[in-house]
Image (cartoon, each protein chain N blue to C red):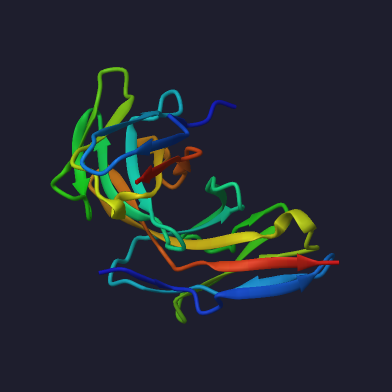
Length: 113
Length: 116
């Protein structure tokens, strides 16, 4: 079965640089979520999109922005990167008729040096 | 605000034995969902099992079962016949419904180590 695809899997950036993370949800899933998991931490909700509209916003810094495109893929844009942004970034997807099934992608490990 | 509590930072279990990972939650919502995810050292988050607040029967998925006690607000994960491959971090999470979306709030996790 198709799963959530995230790219890149690993990313190394320097402070103050910009990063773009991509997420391709499971086919026919209309909702995308972004989570951030710091080292040794539990995942924290950042933002979600339903049918290309932002549906909820969590603890996402103003330096970050995200959007969902017409093909339902989503991108998380991170600017002015800080050392503390080093984390595992997960994308998850679900469909409105089965919202209890929220499947996660493999994650993008971002390292800021 | 919703809250998930996992009081066991680490657990050991012998291979082939059963183990229970604890999870308690706090919410004022009448409708909610509880999840368990497994995170091996490779980092991915693997969905294990789901329990809806209105489900009368405890959820089961293969060797995983969820001991749901609504009055106590607990949703413990039971893994039967543990295998070495079960060694991982396990997160309990609660679904908060926002319109058509549902974000998850996670507990701090329990690291399970299966020994020979």
